[in-house]
Amino acid sequence: MSVRPGRKFGYIAAAIILAAAIAVYSIFDPESSVFWPKCPFYMLTGLECPGCGSQRAIHSLLNGDLLSAMHYNLLLVLAIPYLLLYVLLKTAVKIHEKVPGLFPGLMKLCGKLEMALYHGPALPVVLAVILLFWIFRNFTPCF
Image 1: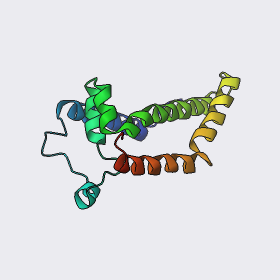
Image 2 (image 1 turned 90 degrees about the horizontal axis):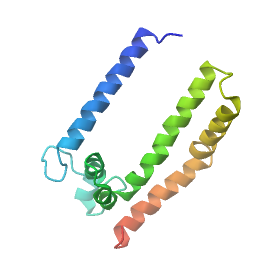
Image 3 (image 1 turned 60 degrees about the vertical axis):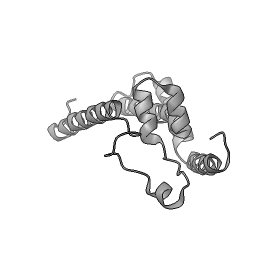
Image 4 (image 1 turned 90 degrees about the vertical axis):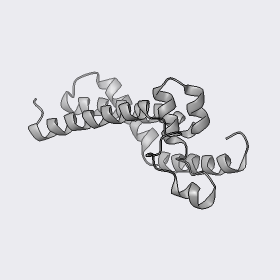
């Protein structure tokens, strides 16, 4: 099976954009650069939203500073493995759709894991985690 030309171009464009974003985030520190956007919620209220510190956390992660990244936005750092697992499971399911006989037991498990962790009841749990993080980071000294 071959990839359609339009889809192939989309994959290449996405890879180039991702590589450029990684380069920009690793080189330019959002804490000291003036061109990075500031959080409008923080500017209006003085409170941090769940995403506050994400740009600095990404910069820190790309430069190998896990502790600083956790300080800037713990939720983002903890969400990265969750999001990567989703990509891996989705990829496994797509492979299974194209090659149905390949590791049938493992592919069935990947499909079940994807459904359990990313659909249905998982969505309110993820929302609750985000809301609790938002509350705790503004009203407790440890976040």
